[in-house]
Image (cartoon, rainbow, N blue to C red; front, side):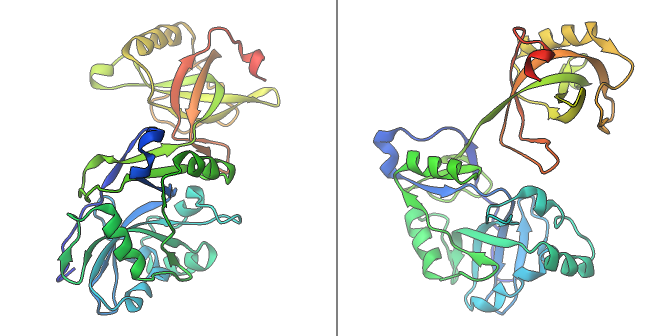
Length: 317
């Protein structure tokens, strides 16, 4: 956008809470489950939204257009576009019905059905000044002073210190977790920084392996992903694809077990449409970490934790 610098979003590193003795040096924000957006406001009544990849997504979210007339100052802000459930929590599954709509007319219709909300959490440019070199605390103060709170956008508060309590609050509320931000940290465009740490609540589930997808390159012949399920009314219901979490040794062990258990037919009641899938007897049990579930019961952000040779499928019914 003319007159405004294009700034890539700073990214958080997955991790745990900072040590209690240093938590007063950190602010804690609720981790939102939505689509990252850099918000360009030239001060002339217009707005431009760019996704994390840099794509122009302005037309996808017409209800956010009015933000351009609210702030009469040139600014670039950082935030997350979310769709809220009935309890006021960000719900990525709801947001997916809004993402990627090419038709402006359809986007407008969907805005009535599944309205979105823009959560603002950083200011990186304001009134002709680059703010990326300022510490987090100063940028947050400038952002909050803009007073951007409305029907479709808000600037939620950040809590300094009290990380354990903040994380527990989000767990109790059914939220995804928190993002810890070092108070003295500058804004690092495009960098996955240790100055921002995202802490998710980890959920664990025992699953049954029903298939796999071969890896590529150095992983040729080894599993690139496991297709897993849970027992359901005498059958096996597919709940997701797990593609991370193994060591090289574990991956090799799994490959050997999968080869022995190979079968021709899909063991899942709800056969997943996965290109290149290979099926196995549903007898291997594993433990998987995940963030949340979709409304259909699929695991979001699953990660392999360990094989459970001590369990048989009948043990987890």
